[in-house]
Amino acid sequence: MAIDRVDVNVTSPGRNFVTVKITTSDGAVGWGDGTLNGRELAVVSYLRDHVAPTLIGRDESAIEATWQYLYRSPYWRRGPVTMAAVAAIDMALWDIAAKKAGVPLYQLLGGASRTGLLAYVHASGTTIERLNEAVHGYVEQGFQAVRVQAGVPGLDHIYGVHDAAPGGKYEYEPAGRPAAGAPLRPTEETWDTRAYLRHLPAVFEGVREEFGPELRLLHDGHHRMTPIEAARLARSLEPYDPFWLEDCTPGEDQSVLRLVRQHSVTPLAIGEVFNSVHDYQTLITERLIDYVRSSATHAGGITGLRQIMTFAGIYGIRSGFHGPTDVSPVGMAAHLHLGLAIHNFGIQEYMPHSEQALQVFRTGYRVEDGLLHPGEAPGLGVELDEEAAAAHEYAPAYLPVNRLRDGTVHDW
Ligand code: GCO
Ligand code: MG
Image (cartoon, rainbow, N blue to C red; front, side, top):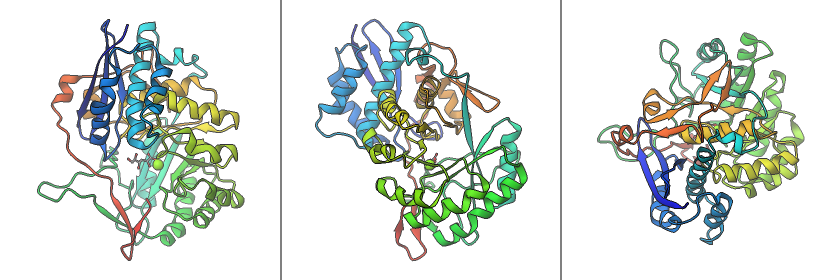
């Protein structure tokens, strides 16, 4: 059998998603996620103009060979656009392979290593009190791990920090759309690292006091610190037993984490902006991190992410796959199947998609007592409803820009 069609779907049920549909000559269909937040159409063009035409007629079961063909043959390797495109194709081919075998994908990846995947959710609040209210809401639902982000006195707005709406409904959407008639530009935010470093230990103290020692607490530093600032933060959080500190520095300079490690035993997680195993070479071989944050969607699909996790496993480093709403339900399902199968699973980020998105993507995965499971449907277990998708036209949305108080563009 062979690949007959490669279609690229762009839909925007509340936020943009890029989805590949591969159809084979015997009528099998597979879905893959290639969503790259704020740069979606670059991936669409890469797929439609440069990838799809080269795949027609290829054996759809040759997944590894197709991955290598797409990775090596264009000469220009890696990069987020390329690797999101490779990811979408790779996921769709795995989906087809598992559907043809009549099994949920995790069975092809080695079978289940556990009964469910520990999930962490996002809680935030402009104050510690509002944050604790949000955490309460999740604990009542049975979640055992929560990422805590809070407002900082003196700063108007911080990325990822919102109060839950009345009734506890909590929506967090990373990319913003300009108001009608406003110019198409990212919003701007102001940042002050000193104020943040002073305040964060009190946030952890406030949450620990309220919830006791058992609840796992995570925090995302979102690349905003220098190495010495990151070391200070990591050390100052130690008394509150953090599960991890994520992206404490910009990840591209891998060696800076040596300095953070010298000063702290707070576990570190990094890699959501990485797109290949090579981005992790120093981090893994020197054991500078504890958790791999990549997503299948941005790191070459199941094949790419599995390479990273095999390498990480040799060094005892575990998974913490990136699971924001900008990874579509198809990408999320890829994480759940891989996470269920690999030995070195750690934790799975779980930011539930909106009702609107879930009317377009029909999912079979579930969460019970804070544990995720991909379900038993053959393949990935997620289907795109193309008719429903067609009702939501692409609308540009951008992630914000972060500036210091004097206007200097800052990492975020
Ligand atoms: C996380 C992330 C996300 C990213 C988003 C950018 O830890 O989940 O930091 O919220 O900011 O994926 O598109
Ligand atoms: Mg993050």
